[in-house]
Image (cartoon, rainbow, N blue to C red):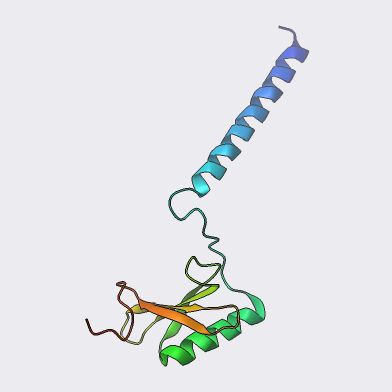
Length: 112
């Protein structure tokens, strides 16, 4: 094999390895049962409105996470309560509360 052929073969091999590595990164980044979720945080003016609506509804705590396009609603705001527990507040596109769920899966306010 001459020098020019070796350079071309090396270049082709490097490209193939780079493409294969990218494919693995893409394949590893998604999947599973939650692959349809966007996992996108709320941003801009919507973030302030979503935080205010959720905190107003709960009456205490701090926002510890947000998500647009949640499987249960348009917006989800996760709030860490003063006692350390967490609850998720689901909001529609108009920032109206659709539901809230405590971390352990029981609707907040239920005593069962």
